[in-house]
Image (cartoon, rainbow, N blue to C red; front, side, top):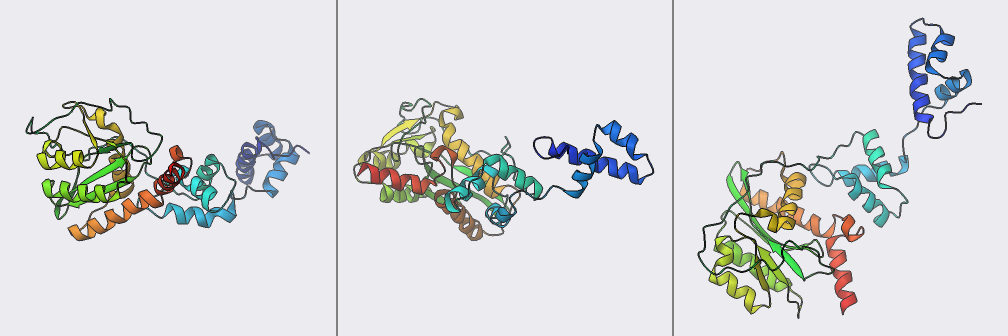
Amino acid sequence: MDSPEGGAGLAARERAAAVAELSGLGHDLADLLEAAGLARSTYYYALANPKGPTRPELRGRVAEIFGRLPNGVGHRQIAMELRAVDGARIADKTVLKMMREMDLRCGIRRETDYHRYNSYRGVVGETFENVLGRDFEADGPWQKMGTDVTEFRLSFGKAYLAPVYDFGSKEIVAHAISLHADLAQQEEMLAMLMAAKPEGASPILHSDMGWQYQHATYVRSLAENGFTQSMSRKGNCIDNGATEQVFGHLKDEFFRGRDWGTFEEFKRDLEEYIHHWNHVRRQAKLKGLTPAEFRNQALQEAA
């Protein structure tokens, strides 16, 4: 029997369904089968064996993982979670197929106007050369890092996030969320950064030429704690592209299409997302590990 199983199975089922619909409208079945290029046995086999759902035993987990973020989770992250946590043998494309069957659609990364915050006020303090030179690759944590400030416009006004992003572990190692992009925010971020820094680490911390990164308090704090300061060239955001990319993911996954009535609610939810980024969100560049898992593994191997 000419079975529709195999690579042509889906096409045969689709043609059989079309033939059945037209036959029901009074058209001659033999003529329809000839036009569709279907053997009679294939036609009846396809009708008797409709296509079932892909990996039905995993559908509940796919829905649960997808629902962790307000704007959904991509198929690669879901596949990595299924392999790492559930031990499932499943390909990325199979998860994508399941999501399409389940009508789960994640927002696609795209260029958009997210009101980029610009803190450049000219040379108002000490500046530094671009030590990184757009080389954001690092084979371990606490080697190369980036920082910047991004702005959110909300019903209650504006809010600002100042994170430090580790290029090696892909972890947001320190951050401060504030109503004002001021020196107090930077001091809060620096306190968290220094508390997290492993003993003996001497990372490069890259930023743009914003006024806060030229400020004597900021410069002194980095120098006293073993950091090498690096700065982008004036007006060249590509020099800090790795950190800008994190802002894009964050605003697509967490912020897009949402609003908050109070700063306290916004800060609470953003803190939760940052925890998700560090401890739950798996990354292909880390071979399916979360940033925290990669960092812990790397530090243990170095000890």
